[in-house]
Length: 142
Image (cartoon, rainbow, N blue to C red; front, side):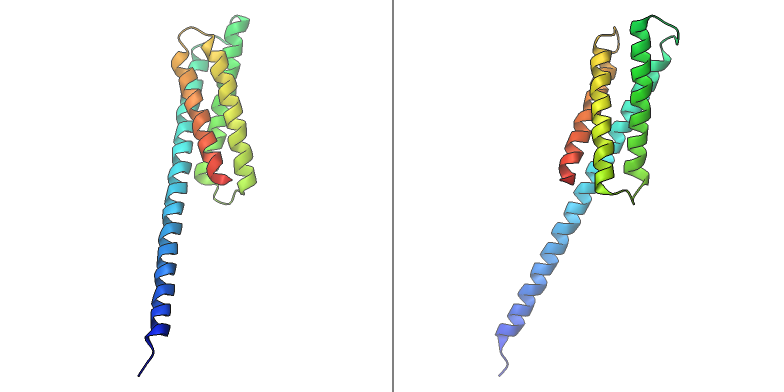
């Protein structure tokens, strides 16, 4: 008579491995979805900031010049962050985190500047959304 205990132990081990593999796969999917959402938010913010900067004269009043410069800077940082998230699979976690933190900081600074400029409220909201999405994605890296 053969023992069922070793067979049952083997089945339990296989079941645990399958469950762990599914959980790992779900975690990977969630991570990739969060990464994509962050890249998308960065793209939307880059567009909004570039559009805002293009609406202002390069040699306009100081207040407009600040909005224009912040818009350009935010667009460039968001674009770079999107590229890191969507293209550079070899980037290390510390590098990704640093890029996300930089993006979050620039977006929040830009939002504060846009808040003080008439008709830029929607762009400020887009910047804050990007900063929030970066913050959420940073949390998945910890």
